[in-house]
Length: 141
Image (tube, rainbow, N blue to C red; front, side, top):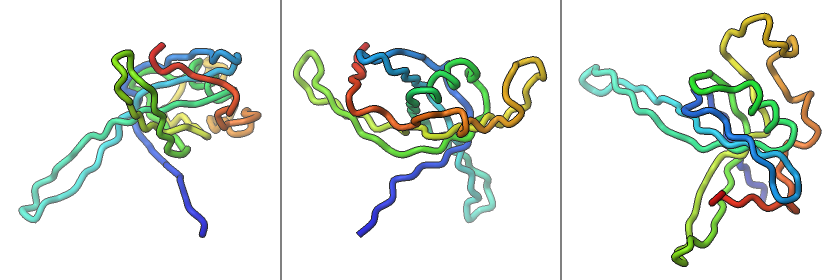
């Protein structure tokens, strides 16, 4: 039976992207993103709830995100859920679930002098959006 692991988010960055290199030389960027869910209660009261997400991107997409994204920017992120685990220095197993981005579209209006391609959709600029199996990213770093 087939399964699906796909995430689509539209929201604002909660912190500037952090671009790093793995021990194998692969680029990885991490940043936070917030989305809002809104609904109306039975009493016609509008409610809103923010949800916070951890995003990671690899390779050329990581470099693009690191260069052009900033805290507060509105972006479309497409990717999949990934859970990593590691042992803390105290020997406790820690789990972290994040969205691994495979595509990103900047939705904010941008000044004409930013030097971006005509289309803010970066899919054509990526050679391999998936994280490599042979690189190790130390989450404690």
